[in-house]
Image 1 (cartoon, rainbow, N blue to C red):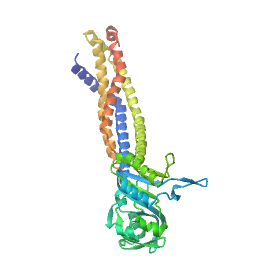
Image 2 (tube, rainbow, N blue to C red; image 1 turned 180 degrees about the horizontal axis):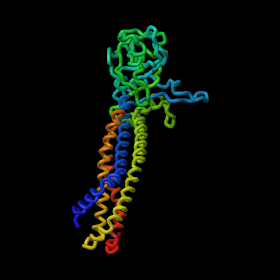
Image 3 (tube, one colour; image 1 turned 90 degrees about the vertical axis):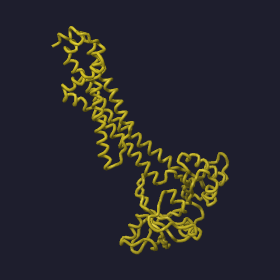
Image 4 (spheres, one colour; image 1 turned 180 degrees about the vertical axis):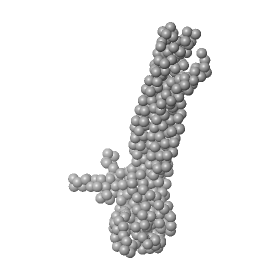
Length: 404
């Protein structure tokens, strides 16, 4: 008996029991739809995190002082003064993998305008900081190199600061605000970036020349940290090694001495968060995949019922020349058709669920998840349909014909 006839017989058997066939498919439909939707949600979350990290500066490298022991007491990195302007200049002039470097000094306090005030942090940076952290000017202009040299009392503010200080709709450009009793003239407003992946408000920020914060606010000569941008993200490890070598040379550290600085890249943070979301996605997909096993058991059960109901039919086919392999193929094809049809319907439901969820949170349906679903459906149909089909092929024709 050829394969076409076997498929026709299987389709005819399924059409004679439409409701039973649909209920059998239901477990497969739910399983496939759940797997596709869970993977789509997980992949959407991963892409969302990567996008937010990219907004923070995916090529970002952060250089900070390291903790040290003084008088038997370990000091925090914020209390250390190991980063100097000479380190910034050495990294800027000697690194091959960096496109931009910015000194960082900052201070927290109240920013005041008229009767309004807000707690915030003012960051002392240079012009490269805008490219490193992907900030853009929405209104006004960026401070100049001359402002840095002169330690000018000018600043750029974020949208959150504007909303809290200028409650009557005043134009912030040109306005004078006070931070720790020091007047700053606003010359620009940053384009809004919202919250980042760690839940920090990226608009609650004030940028000023780093020399101004060093001299007029903190009265220090050292740097609290450095931010740098790598040419390409894949060069992050090489850039870290290069920066480490430059700083160890500058700080006259001997082989075997511990680093008195810390270097971190956004690649590390991105990899960590991506691995977490991947594990959660696989866990959700595995839980959803349990319904595929339940669906497979349903197929096995219904195939057993089908073999029992059609025992006389099997006997008649075998008595007129059908071989055991033909009977086995007939029921195996029927099992696979149930599984694949349920899988196709499940894929449509999976796309529909992903589309609905996408209205509330980003999702990303992956082609490999659809192919995986069909592969699993085929395997499920073969695995759970084989034993009932095998049992049918081993029936004795005479006993089968006599079966009531």
